Length: 397
Image (cartoon, rainbow, N blue to C red; front, side):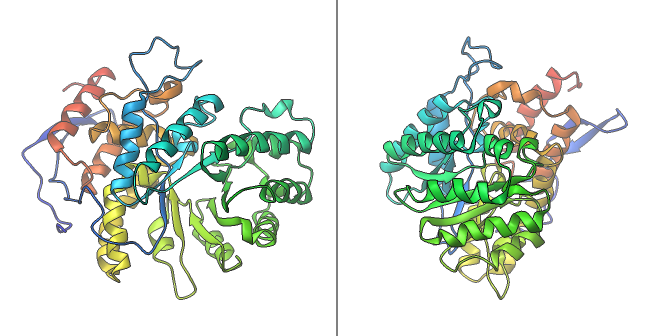
């Protein structure tokens, strides 16, 4: 593995700064990560893989999603090559912000079929209630029926379930008991153990007060009870609260059969490494953008090479914190921008027009941080594509 102090290359470009001036930024050589996992892992790690939009479709992006299916599935092949699992049709895939349920189900069907053609390819898929408008949910039974519909559809195409947080449930539930009732009903019916998903309101403001309380400690009591009461049907729970202390506290309360999947894109390295009392597995949006580094780091961790694990992941954390900065719900823009810079797609176009959700300064800083982490696999290509985006936003070459 290359050392951290990498000399700048002769390659440079002009990037905007906060004071409206332009700096000449010199790129560094990339770190060289394997294209395929080079060993076993002792953590289960999912990437919440993004979808690739079709930029030549005549569909209006705000109204109807149009996907490039070949590139979308090719990106999942890239994730599987690296020994990571795919968390399909999750929030990184723009679910609920442009990607509707019919298209999500088509995506799940295609992804499950692709995984079936590969030995050991892991894919779990998001089941939610997003086909039910929150304002159309009048009672808890409406939410149960919506979950049942999506779970049945995903299991019908051979998929495993990630039970996503529900905006409709957050709207109609009146107490923690309502949550326990909904989750208990669905978990009693699933074919195989599922992953639950606790998504904080920094990702989706409509989920404020999930589990029946805006107080995290009270909400966590309900979530832990739901998990432990149904442990035989729960593979694990992913929490995305961006707070390492809460995750560790919950991890220590879980039934030993249940995995904790970190969804903390700020503190993932320390949470995956763990402590004397346990560790987290991973279900992360940032593992889309840093998949080669994540794979290499996890192989080192499995070998007991914790210094190498942290050497790889430490410089990715500032990038992740930048991509996931508030308003966090726009993090998908940075994830897809990384895919564009690294050649996984030929354009910076997103479902729902989300490429416009972050500022020019945000993208410029993302580029700097990706370079410092050694994540721009082909600096010449990345610089050329960055110049194109900057030119479209009025920045001189």
